[in-house]
Length: 511
Image (tube, rainbow, N blue to C red; front, side, top):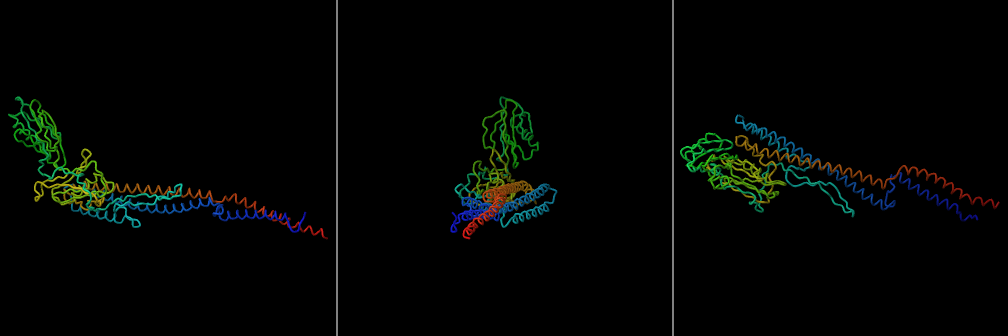
């Protein structure tokens, strides 16, 4: 049945054409935007996921900028530390040349002071955008990543860069808990006579024996034949030991008692003896260990200790930032306040540097490690006319201070005297070690930052690629689909035209 009111064929053709036009519009949108999911209407789930990922990508781009800024800041600090190390090595060369007596130490000291000024200028100028990592001790955090868990919660991750203080500040002595138990002086006075560093031996004749006496001091052996009695034999031994000309080693006797004295500041020596027969020899006292040997024997050995007094540091205590340690010599306080991640070795070397920079006439220092314990050795040669033959020596410790700078003691290096030149040689080694450690720490941090930056850039690329896979249009498929839909559209128009022309044929029925 044909009807002029209802044209079913036209309705079908029109509906088909509408569908074709809708699909054609969608393909055209894909081609014009480049996306198959351009908004939430296209695909709500995919759009939501891709939008979250897109915001993460933008955040990671900002993190990349943060890492680049951090890398540049650390790079400036690393370069400064390396420059300081080089200058300190130049200073060491000057200090080595000042060890000779036939040089102009005044001119050398002038060069040392110029290098010191240059180092100070470098430390002050080593900033990037106002951030100076070679001054102070506070850590610096650099934004490194954003971590999103399965619940969608986001947390920030930082890279921590430790400042490496290369200033010469002395720090501020603490006022907190007592640390006096971590530092112990071996004596309350420093005795220039060396009386506390001698071995006393008693030689005795047994059963009429006339055996020779042999004594070896630091590898030099002296043998004395029996002469009249034990006292005379010991007297001959005293003369023979003194004739060896061993630096700082002297011998004396009180009857049959042999005394061997060591006045060397920091050198210990081995002493051994043998009666070569029935006669006996006993250790009356070894003042280095403050112990009586007791029983007599034909042979034996002992240590002839150095003259300097020991200030021993704890082998078990942890060193925290701000821990303050003090050695008082002749009433003058010499402090060192520990920084981050320092050890008792650092404390010992800092205390040595502090004393060397003082005004104590005739006082010299050394740092040693004996039986895993770090010690500051303090010696006095008796040349201070006001102090006399002895100086007082005390110690103390307290928490809660402000750390000394990594180049603490640089300001006090003075090679204008032989004593100052000798002290400077050991102290500059500590300063070089500190600057090398600082440069190495900054180098490690900069490498870590650059590695993180490379990872973040790779992550950005991966996220961008993932987002593209979800929302980007397949242009090859869209192009082919567009051409097909255009053909379909043309056919649809023709089909609609044919359908619309059907009622016209009904007019022939009424002619």
